[in-house]
Amino acid sequence: DVKVTQSSRYLVKRTGEKVFLECVQDMDHENMFWYRQDPGLGLRLIYFSYDVKMKEKGDIPEGYSVSREKKERFSLILESASTNQTSMYLCASSLSIGRSGNTIYFGEGSWLTVV
Amino acid sequence: SQQGEEDPQALSIQEGENATMNCSYKTSINNLQWYRQNSGRGLVHLILIRSNEREKHSGRLRVTLDTSKKSSSLLITASRAADTASYFCATALYSTLTFGKGTMLLVSP
Image 1 (tube, each protein chain N blue to C red):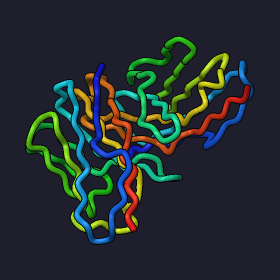
Image 2: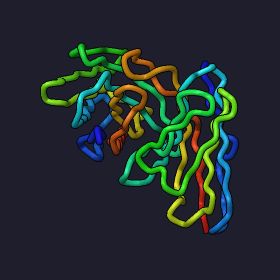
Image 3: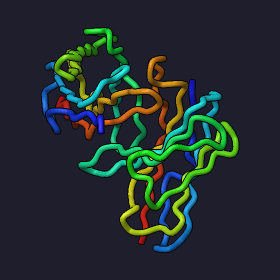
């Protein structure tokens, strides 16, 4: 089975702190994604990466950056955490999606609270 | 945005009844996928239907796709309490999936 592991399940950080959310997948997938999920807003794509050292902005990249130095690892970075970044963050990975019809595999989520 | 919109936002039924959820989207797609999320957990893939397909079945799940109306429906037959979860449709185009806001399904024993 595909496994997507998010390093932290629950985090509490202070405003202005630099926050790292780590994600590792074990299926050699090219694509990796970071979403955030908020009540009433569903899942929104922050960034995705289709190859090592490659990244693309999603719908809400402001206030976030990402790093993909190795194929299996995709990190989400909050340079200076703010209270409006309190949310559940979901990492996912997949083979190619569009025409190939592959699916996305999600991690269990990281609940981040910024105080 | 090609974001899907699920309808209804919430659905409450009794065990044994069928549950139908609908999804509408705005742009062309390669495929449409349905996912399930138990409370506080990650999403799990349920079923995928390609843009050239009209209907697909998997166990108690039946998905239809009408590309002319840009809509899809997910039917869960003979629902169980364990089906209680949020259900999301996701539209796929090129390299990304775009998710709707989800339907919360409550199945009471």
